[in-house]
Length: 384
Picture 1: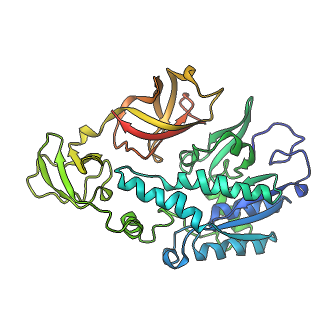
Picture 2 (picture 1 turned 90 degrees about the horizontal axis):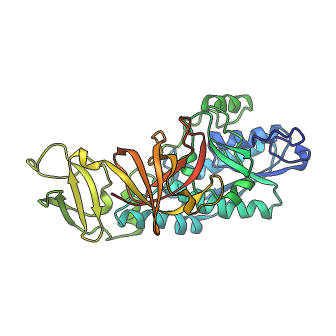
Picture 3 (picture 1 turned 180 degrees about the vertical axis):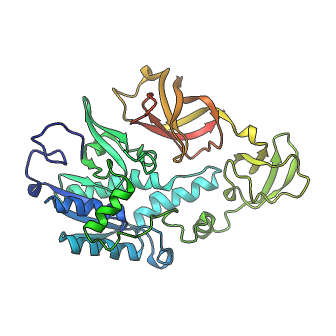
């Protein structure tokens, strides 16, 4: 499971019996983390399941596809009972609100587009929960993410999952080297259908449970509902302005708009060429800038808070480094060049791309066409 070729190691990479290897499994109550835990338990590992209560049940239990809601906690507990390993529920509501939900709201209010799943992995799961796993005396912590951990010449490496359609490397780019040393991803070589088949084989109650599709703490699927609740009266009206400077209409708050948005702009008929897209959101002037689709294309992306998982150390030697990048989770990695200009960190795409938004991630991959290895990434600050 960890890609090691040393036959003296067990599947989690330790030179001892499975029964002597303690592993904490992060269990959301979904099929992936449930199969991860059941698989390790079936192999004789000393498994401890942990589920995090991340938000108020009354707000999320109505949403059948949300993770870590009341039903999900019950489902995780049932899996632990069926596979005969201990299971604990930890109340992390305060941590989650402070580190994920508050950041989510503030990022939208600043005119950017957040990725709460990355923030959750970066803070609550791979920092706070990982510390709990160590306190429990675990040798490692495992999750149901679709990604591979492979041992290379310089230690553990992060690689895209076998099933590129389920690959979650985009959401795990901020995983540090220290965290990667401790983490394990048993499902990285599986397809989703194989995972569900294992759930049926183990007789798990979640075998046919649907995948979570939306942001887990947004019960209606409408992100502005959450922002309005935790930041009341935060929507400040302003102008919708064409790239040519013409004021076309009014908006009710920049948080209601995202880069690349076409529908729901609320502009009157005859507002110029059709269709118009959101090209830029300017927090300083409280303006939503719109224009033709062609104006969405960008080549240069400015980044901050780089996490480097590639060969060697992150330094000036990376200037001119060829790689592939993803600027959205659903897109394939594309060719780009890493540029260091003074204190500025820039990625220049070989071909212009559309809908690149500040607040999103630019994730790095190795330059070969298969782009197997994940080299880290950074947060998008601005585009050209």
